[in-house]
Amino acid sequence: MALLAGSAAGDLAFRVAQVALPLVILQETGSVAATGLVGGAAGVPVLLSPWWARKARQWVDSGPRLAVVAAISALALAVVPTAAGLNALTPTLLVVSGLLLGCGDALSNPGRSALLADTGDRWGDGKAVLLLTWQDGLRRIGMMVGPAIGALAVSTGFTNGLLWVEAATVLAAGLLACTVQAERAPEATATPSIRASLKGRPDVLYGWIARGTGCVTWFAFTLGLSVIGAERHQPGLYLAAGMTGYGIGSVIGTTISLAVVRRTRPVPLAAVAWATMGVCWAAMGLWTTPPVIAAMGALSGVTVVLGIAAISVLITRSSAGAERRALLSGQSVVVNAGSSAGMLAGGPIIAVAGAENTLVGAGLLTTLVAVLILVKPKPKQCQTAVHAGDRDHHPGRAA
Image (cartoon, rainbow, N blue to C red):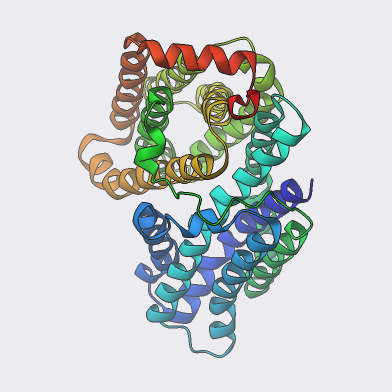
C-alpha cells in the first residue's frame, strides 16, 4: 500500500504541477521555446536507458533504494522554483533539471513497478497483475483531476508553490517506500539486457509493438483535438471532451480489467484493445462533434487499460527478479520513445494533412498493426509458456 500511495501521490502532484511549470518558465525567461526544455531533456535519459541503466536499474530492488532515487528526482524538481525565486532561471538550468529528472524516472518507474509485482507475488497468484493494474488506474485518476486542481491553484496565484509541492510529494513518496523490503539478489547475479530478456518471450514483443504504435499515434488525439478546437473557435472544448471521456473510460476499464484478463489470452486481448482504440480515433476524425469525441474517448480509455493489463500479465507470469526489471524498463522505453517520436512528427503531419484526416489515418494505422499482430502465427514454445502461466502465475516459483 505504501508503494501504491506513493505512486498515486507523486503522479497527482506531477499532473497538478504541469499546469504551473510552463507558466513559471515563461514568466522568468520570456521564451516560449524554453517551456518545453524540462520535459524534452527528461526524455533523453529514458530513451538512452537501455545502454546506461542496465546495471543501475537492478540496484533499485528495495524501498530504501527507491527512496534514494526519489531524493534525486526531488532535487531535480526543486531546481526550477529555487532558481525562479532567485531570478536566476536559465535554459541551461532547465536542461540540467530535465536530465536529472529523466535519470530518476528511468530508474524509479520500472523499479517501483517491479517492487509492486514482487510484493504481489508474495501475496499470491495473480496479485502482481492486480497491483500493477491499480497503479495504472490511480495514475489515470490523477490524469483526470490533476489538471483541474492545478488550474484552480494557478488562478489563485499559487504558481511557483505548486512546483515546491511536487518536489516535496516526490520526496515523501520515496520515504513511504522505505518501509518496503525486497529479497536481495546475490552479487554475482547477471544483469540481463532488455533484448536478452525478450528471448523466449515473443508475446511480450508483440504486445510492445501494439502499445508502441498507439503511443506513436497518440499525438493525433491530443494535438489533433486541440487544433480542431482552435480552428472552430472553441479552444479546449474538443480536447476536454476527449480527455474527460478517456479518463472516465480508463477508470471503468481498471475496475473490470482483472476479470477480463483472467478469461482472455493476453496477446489477442492486447491486439483487440489497440485495434478498437484505432477505430475510435478514426470515428473522431469522421464525426467530429463533442458528444462523439467524448463517447469514443471513453471507449478507447476502457480498451487501452485492458491492453496494458494484458501486457502486465505477460510480463509478470513469465519473469521475475532481474529479468522482470529489464522488461519493465524496456516497456518504459517503448512508451516514452513512441510518444516522443509521435509528438515530434505530429505538428508537421497535422499541418499538412489536417487534424481530422490525421485522426483517421492514425486510427487506421493503429488498427492495422494490431490486426496484423492478432493474425500472426505464434511459435509453439510461446503458447506453451502462456498455458504454463495460466496454471501458475509465477513459473519461477513453481519448481
